[in-house]
Image (cartoon, rainbow, N blue to C red; front, side, top):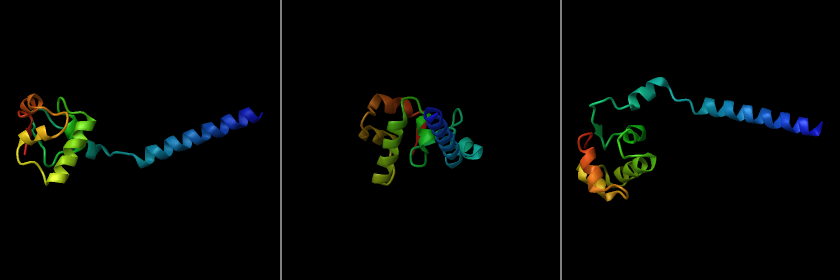
Length: 103
């Protein structure tokens, strides 16, 4: 009986936690749509969100966060080539990104 009670309490806690998480981490459809980069649209390195940066080929979550951190620390990018100052971004990747990004 104690095992059943313990399992029931654990299940209720899990359901409550999932419900609370869903309510506090809701992303509106409007906000998501503005974060999506449309085909042919260029991404401004000085204004892009993490989601927009991650949409670029070769840029994952970690590199996107490093781009934002660099941008904040240095007052923005003055050229696309500055991306090479970020660990893990080499000139070849920058050359590939030049068709998709601007400053």
